[in-house]
Image 1 (cartoon, rainbow, N blue to C red):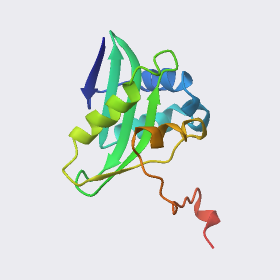
Image 2 (cartoon, helix red, strand yellow):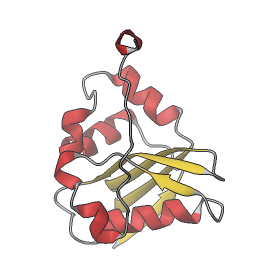
Image 3 (tube, rainbow, N blue to C red):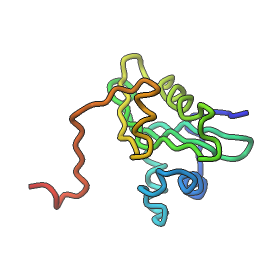
Length: 136
């Protein structure tokens, strides 16, 4: 049985261990515990999925709760994928938002097909600036 929890603190180690079990881990600074800790401490909303005492999923968001919610990390352990955990993490996140708040995310390459399947609409104008030196 999977239990979902909202804003229950998790450790950097738990987060890193989960990310290592997903394709998202390749694009996260798993060797930089200070950054991982900052990611957790400065999130506005964290919904976690637990199988017993084991963290098997996370939806980590930055949000104002009213207009926009950026779902920055949606990760489910590859051992428990295809059981609806990712979708339920999104549902539990939405339950914490005010009516009309829009959820935005950037899909990991291996998850591009997942999001349209569950109802997300693709947006054609997303832009990323990774470093100030890239600004002209």
